[in-house]
Length: 255
Ligand SMILES: Cc1cc2nc3c(=O)[nH]c(=O)nc-3n(C[C@H](O)[C@H](O)[C@H](O)COP(=O)(O)OP(=O)(O)OC[C@H]3O[C@@H](n4cnc5c(N)ncnc54)[C@H](O)[C@@H]3O)c2cc1C
Image 1 (cartoon, protein in one colour):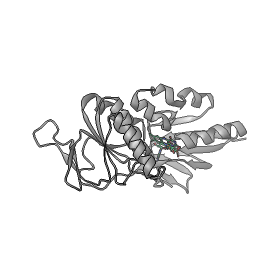
Image 2: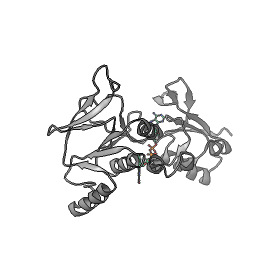
Image 3: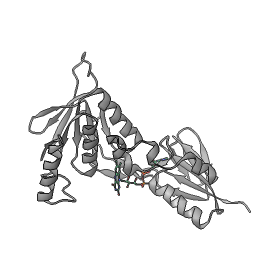
Image 4: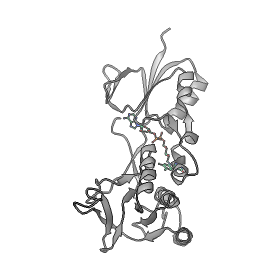
């Protein structure tokens, strides 16, 4: 009997975990094909911060290596973003033209980081924090540049700030609210956290609003690249790297 075809779009934590359970329950039910926009096998996204701070390597955070897909007969397309679902033909189409037919389609495309709509947000050196590519960009920036600003004093922003500090950068966290991690902590706990991070050398501006990300002067080494962050009160903080960690939105575009 012909096996049913299952296509998973999104080679991330939730999707591949679902496949693991499915393979336990019914190993022979489906011919499985996976599309992942990133060029990597499934890894533990939560552990990107220890990679950033140098406590773990990328190899150590892989959850399912390429051999796992092969051993389970799964066709894996990495580095291929699915752009279209043709529901009439029951086919998905990737950016490079790769097609795969499905009987069942599982969409597990995760979330996209929010990008603040401030002037300069598209400058080189302004990034978000979601995947291995972003982590690698931060590691590279820390080896070449000295000043970082992290916008967002939630968990993700503080993890980014801590990692960049551990890699030798001078890091300032700009946070809109009155204390850090205000969703998880009350004012007193937020202040305790801030003082303990200040003892490690992190700097904070809060409550503070980002008005603009400033480009380097034309003709200078930093031309076309971020050079500073300007706050609503007029203060300008030098920055060769800006990390926006101001929330995520479900990535529902394809669905
Ligand atoms: C640095 C960091 C630290 C975190 N720490 C914690 C923590 O401590 N605790 C916690 O609970 N959570 C944490 N999270 C959040 C956690 O990682 C996510 O909740 C989890 O990864 C969500 O899994 P997912 O499979 O839904 O999405 P993801 O893991 O994001 O996987 C989605 C995948 O789909 C791919 N994709 C998207 N669109 C397409 C497309 N059209 N075609 C092909 N592929 C596509 C993406 O490239 C991505 O690889 C952290 C996140 C980050 C970034």
